[in-house]
Amino acid sequence: METSPVSTPVSTQVSTQVSTQVSTPVSTRDAPAPPETRSGAPDYQTSRAIREAYTARLAKLDYEERTGKLLNADEVKVRHFNLARLLRDRMQQIPRKVAPLIVSAVIAQPDQRVVEELLMDSIREALEELTR
Image (cartoon, rainbow, N blue to C red; front, side, top):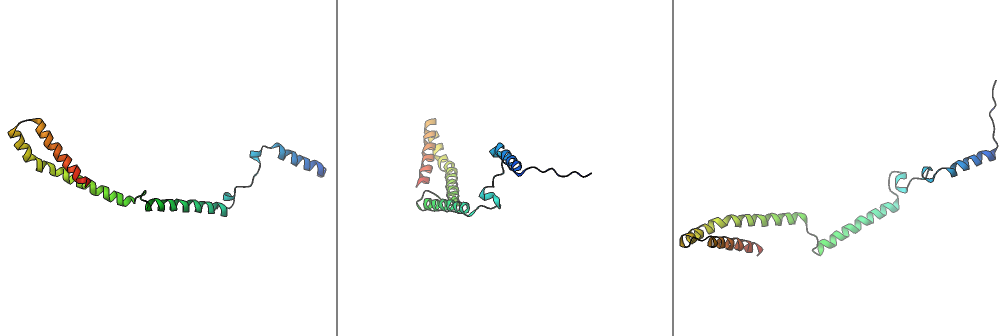
């Protein structure tokens, strides 16, 4: 025995489809994907906006470099290294330069303040030399 398919009136089918679509929350409905995810690549307007943003950033960097607000990192590293090397060399020269003065000062007048003054003067002189 074959059973015949049950047919429902068309108006009932349409109302059932509409009622299920309306009753489901908006978040679970099938919404079209955003333009940038449909094909996996951004659309023209998004691409253009991204390009313009990066062009503006590059223009800002160029402007800041030309006005002196932005420095080349490699140049800064080299100058910092050279300055640190000069400071190290100058500080290492202090004992050779000041030792004879300290010995003569201690023999003439054994006072700690005289030795401190000699050392401070030599250090100050070395630092001032670096600022020139």
